Amino acid sequence: MEFLYRVLATAVAVWAATILPGINLLTGSTAARVGTLVGVALLFGIVNAVLKPIIKVAGCVLYLLTFGLIGLVVNGLLFLFVGWLALQADLPFEVTGFWNGFLGAIIVAVVSFVLTLPLHLKKLVPNGR
Image 1 (cartoon, rainbow, N blue to C red):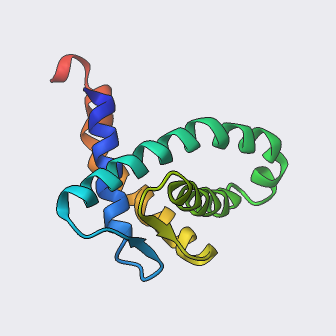
Image 2 (cartoon, rainbow, N blue to C red):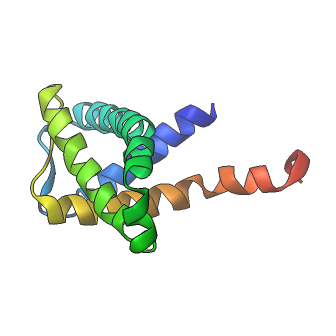
C-alpha cells in the first residue's frame, strides 16, 4: 500500500511540475493524462532506484567538494532523462532543456516530500500513536 501511495504522490508531483512551460503532458483526455503521470512516476522511481546510487558512488568526490549541491544537477539530469525515456516508451510526456529538468526535479522533490510526509511521520511514531 505504501508503494502505491508513493507512486501516486510522485504522479501528483510530476503533474505539479507541468506548470513550467518546458514540461508538457502531450495528451488530451483526463484518463490519458492520469495514466501518463502514473507511468512517468513509475519510470522516475525506477531511474532513481537504479541510476542514482551508481551516480552517487561514482561521483562521491564531487558530492563532497560541492557539499551535495551537485545532487541538484544530477536530479535535473535524471528528470531530463526520464522525459526522454518517456518519449521512447510512447508516453506523451516531455521535458525540454536542462533548466526545465532542473526546476522540474526541484518541484517534484518538494511536492513528493510534502505528500509523503505522513509516511515519514508514521515511521517516527511507534505503533501509530
